[in-house]
Amino acid sequence: MATHMPPSLLTALRRLAPGTELRNGIDRIIQHGSGALVVLGGGNAVDELCTGGFLLRDTRFSEQRLAELAKMDGAIVLDESAERILRANVHLIPDASIATSETGTRHRTAERMAIQTGKPVVSVSEGRKIAVVFTGEGRQELESPITVLPRANQMVQSLDRSRRRLDLAEELVTRQELEGEATFRSAVSIIQRAEIIHRLGSDVDDLTVALGDEGTLIRFQATDLLQGVPELAELVIADYASARRRLRTLDDLSHLTMGDVHDPEAVAAVFGFKDLDAIAKPSGYRILSGLPGLPAAVKEGLVAHFKSLSRMMDASAERLGRVEGVGRGRAQQLRSYFEQLRQDAGLVPHNHGA
Image (cartoon, rainbow, N blue to C red; front, side):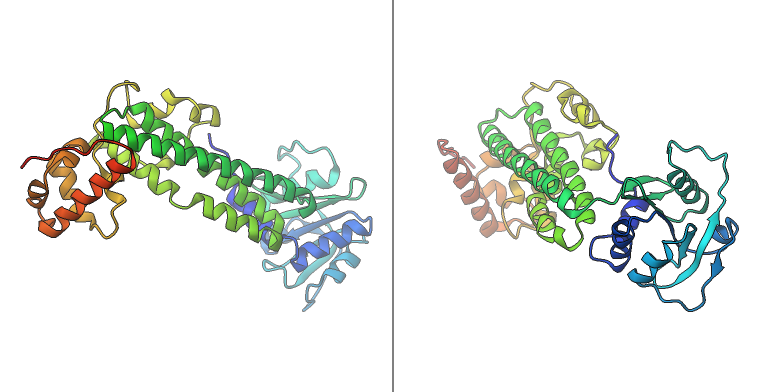
């Protein structure tokens, strides 16, 4: 299956992003060489698992207070928004029967608390000088932006290469469609590349959470490279899939492993493409999307009337104009657009009869 960071972890990491006061407090604890357990959220579920220590009233959170309180052995409990410190120096007693793969005492306690209460828990290791946030859905080490940034840059470079391959694949399928030689394999190639880009984009998004404000440029670059990719995939699916599967999207590939995504047969099966090398008859949605200002209803009318892109492109302006909503002016516009596409591809213009 496609694996991305669980929502609860992403939410917790956003609260702990570099530059936030909460993250600064955690970093101070590490710098002081202290260990700590910090529960991000109070309430009855947490209170029932706390013993000892002391309650704090109207104590505003600050990174300095968090670091000082961590010098005591007990855990610290903050409110949901990390604006108040609720408890300090408490002993946490989660259910010991909750399974955990952690070895250190703090990490084991943190994982069990997170699972049992549903609250994120940060465990700071005194010896290893690392911090890990646990939620009921998993764990994530709080890495320094200096460590994460090279990986994020490398991933954006991979995203850029994948986008260029997708653009080349689209150019190829356009030429094949204009020549009447498009195959289902060509369509699958575009869908595969679009899904790879989609997954890389999700991975970059996960990393930028760990970068905080320093991830802004990375996020902009990734957003630019992702522009129009899902829409392109949906148009290709609509062009090549049967009417029953025409509305499928990249989300229908979410159950596939990355290895499966690289397998044309596995992707083809999702959309009902059986013979990958058979000549296909694309409907024309993708080509029509390249003509600005063409209403969706007119596109649907053209596809429904001509049944295939080749018949549509071979139709005279008069025949095009007979489709409801097209009219003489739009028919001439379509004919000019089709001929320009053929010219750009270096193909001989067709002689269009009535």
